[in-house]
Image 1 (tube, rainbow, N blue to C red):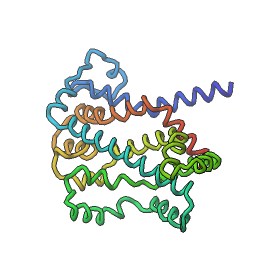
Image 2: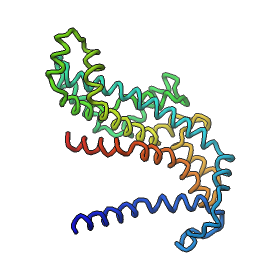
Image 3: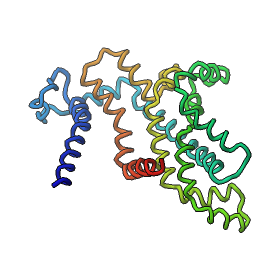
Image 4: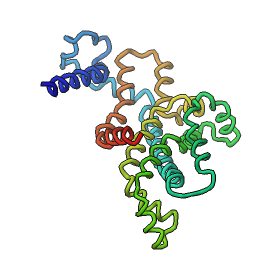
Length: 270
């Protein structure tokens, strides 16, 4: 009985969270001027059409912004996962002087808000002539202390016997990381990579400042610009929002097992 009640509560909570998404997608499929605020109007399936999607895609560069976000997200995720894994391996398995101090300094970066470094970051990007270039978004996102922190926790769990046996066989540091630690922490790397991709996809403030031309914008920065420059109806706003939400929803559906596993393992390790 207790389990049944918990299941009912879980379903109700799920409906509560999915309700705005259902309303957004149904509104995006309704023609302009149709009432979308009452449940009775929701179920008028005869009103549904894809005209709003055609109009938004035709009148904006939303697909180009989506492609830019995808390229930047994949680049940032792949490179930052490799760098975070190498740093985590160094702090976890390689003895070197002042290791604890360097680790505390890196992890303390979590305490610095993004807004506090925007001005020096902009000055650096301006000096390197990276303003209005996608690398101005990719490069600052490559080092993330949370990735090093999480992956180090997992690498601490790799048995020391494996490392010592490989060292006896003559393996060097890079071979130890690639052949032993990477396979044993692969699921953790996938989970952290998903979080990195979502962080990159939702990044707004810095891309909004660093990118000045419309063709180089990413989706999170281009969408509000498009909405503010156009006197659009609620249906078109919901259509643009739905297009922006579709990639992250697909990522969650395809990789939900890794996301749940990563959150569970992070909680256990923490």
